[in-house]
Image (cartoon, rainbow, N blue to C red; front, top):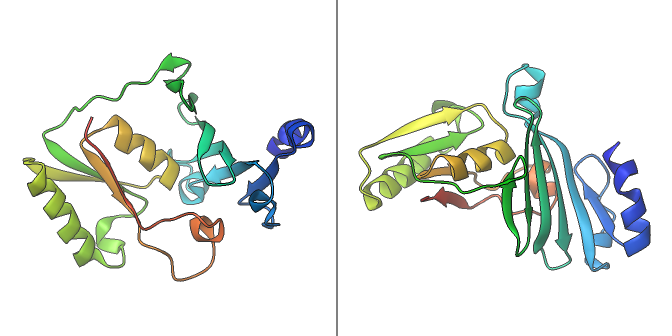
Length: 186
């Protein structure tokens, strides 16, 4: 359904498409812009009938700079969107995240105790907590990466941490970096 809706723009403006659900044809490197689509980020929460999944669509230039981004959370019927140079919006209202906590919130897809490299992650989180002079830390698990990134922005100071995958699939298959720490101080 998403592909059929975007088809007109791909033809009219000569955009490429990169979707997690289709084979990567490499056209995003040849055209000026491409639609980057993840129709179901957070498959596990979706399958388990829990919140934490979303639909994500972005218009990105061939150098990886996003120009338009849209995330829809069907569980809360919340639509987030951003336009380069115009700001970010939540349900069409300017989205301004604010710092709300005196502790570090760690958002993750699975519980820390069940995560590979747990000692390394705990060390990084402790270092960030001390650096920011925060009183403690809380862990919130169970959502997909896109919703976790939104939760980081909405619940600062907060972070999510993903190491590169060993196997093919997900963000690595799409050529996206997954070895970064996302930290919101708002």
